[in-house]
Amino acid sequence: MMKHKTIFEALHGASSFLVENGRDENAARLLMQHVYETNYSGLMMRMHDKISDEKLMEFQKYVEEHAKGRPVQYIIGTEEFFGRKFKVDESVLIPRPETEELIVGALERMKKLFGEHSSVKICDIGTGSGAIAITMKKEWPEAQVVATDISEKAIETAKKNANHLQTEVEFRLGDLTKPIAQEKWDVILSNPPYIAFDEAKEMSEIVLDHEPHNALFAEEDGLILYRKLSEQLPNLLNQPALIGVEIGHLQGEAVAKFFKTSFPESKVEIVKDINQKNRMVFCEINV
Image 1 (cartoon, rainbow, N blue to C red):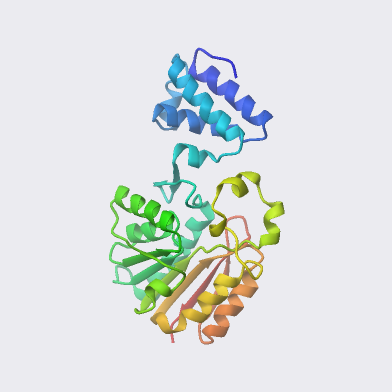
Image 2 (cartoon, rainbow, N blue to C red; image 1 turned 90 degrees about the horizontal axis):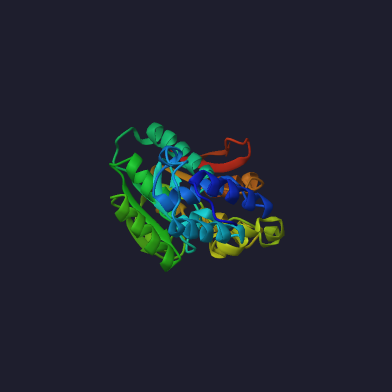
């Protein structure tokens, strides 16, 4: 990329460069906002400002990194989720908009099951960046929220997010329900690894090359963690209780069957996301 005199010209050149390399041209704007530590409107107001050599070099470095495949969120170190900025790095998955829908669905069902402002105990299993756990605490302040993960690095990242967002969440290291097995819970939420290993060939290289594989892939055609959760949770739940999990869009029937088998009297729902794909399974235990 050649040097440009204004932010607008630098952006235009970078956008073209990214498109030529098969990337989203909008990434250039996000990277420029990061360079100038500003938001969309702040950048728009500076479009015709001259860009210094120092800032141009920084910007070009980021653009070239993204052109080679590194996700923008890892370059700028943040991703927005439920209106809040979360710190992300290669130790955790980048939070997705679909997971916001899991939270909305959980909150709606919790109001009906427990009543608003009730003091419920929530656990987010496989917390990653902490997005689910922290958001649940923000949206339901009366809750006691615990988050678990098998990765020490993920727990460190999640703790940084809790501190940054001034949120009281307890983090525990361990596999699935092991860190919470001595207590009873009202709400269990999880967005576990659910991609079958043979699906890797169909995935974006950006995801495969940069996001943590232990947070993406799972055995038994991506279903093993749902099966284990359904087997381990019956002795850990109060009544009423709610389980909510994010799923791959072809896994709805299989995951619903696991929970229906473990909780035969429960109400199990497969719920579609905004794109009309099966994306969540909710299990309400209220007998």
